[in-house]
Length: 469
Image (cartoon, rainbow, N blue to C red; front, side, top):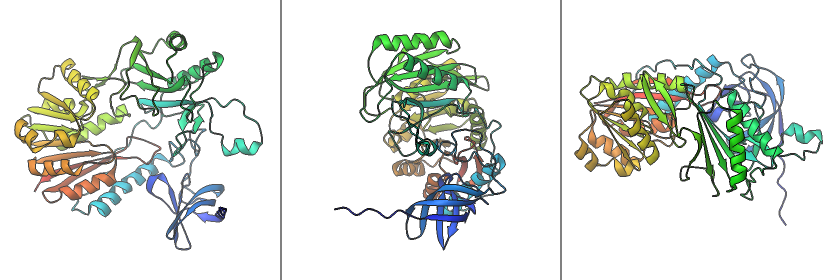
């Protein structure tokens, strides 16, 4: 017979002293580091432990005994439950200070290379409604909050349209209003939810893997164009047509209304056919007179205004004079490649997603850019010594890898290619720091510029310039 695990204790009157990794707050109790989400430095809280190791523990706030001097009122009614914006209770200037320190800590503690003075972080002018892309999940069994459970009420209506609870694939929090995207996104999501309920359309069952209403993606471009992609978990043509026709009638401002029938286990649509209901198959972003076509599967920085600041830093760090051969690794839809092409002799872009490369080629074409080449494939398989020999040794290399950083084989090819300058754009300073240590044998870090793309979250972008020794 299995033994019941003894419940972990409640720690009373814990004082929060700092902000730490993954957006958690930090306290120190009896020589042990305690990680607590949704607390602020100076807060005094009662904490329920949920994990305890020898040197650290993790817990959740049961009660805010006394608010610290830093804490402010969060802007979202779903704060602490949704988990998406873990720093809403911190003033924005304090958030920037924490992100700056996050970059400093990663580069000094992990990279351990010689560093110049790190420039002050570039904050986002827009801290609400700044995202151009949001994704919502429909579920027939919404997540009940602690308050709902404690109320003793029955909740027979469990249909939800919202976000996954962190770390739980089958738990979805029903969202009333999210402040990360223009309110159009809320109105569209709530309309589809209400339409589904009034027409008895089954919301998706995440455990049984069945149901009609599955996910919704909303993309809103700085040009005013709007894309909505509705994903269905079953092929029911009449029901699908009825819903999409209703969306088109209610929201004529949607310029691209698309849908996907996804009956496989996971939610990703990268391997699924996207079908056009009405409007265009893409939307367009604009930057310095350049138009960038964005499709349903395209990667584009989710903060359009701040992406422009990020790309300007990247271009400035590249220091192009007009005669350079530039490699743009992890090019996505070729935004950076096309953005810097006016100041380069030639730009070669490489990206894993074939659809993104097709968008990159089209983006060059519609902007009259004829000095770019794009290739699709896994970076470590495409970027080889033979590829470099065939296309020429780059003068400048721009790299913008995913959170995991660069594969070791890619780093090795870069070191052998010996571009005179590397501009490393990263959404994860920790893996960036690891890669900087690998490049240190031949490259010196000459400039560092953090950029905040995601206000109210712990995430930060960082741009590093490296020059050949």
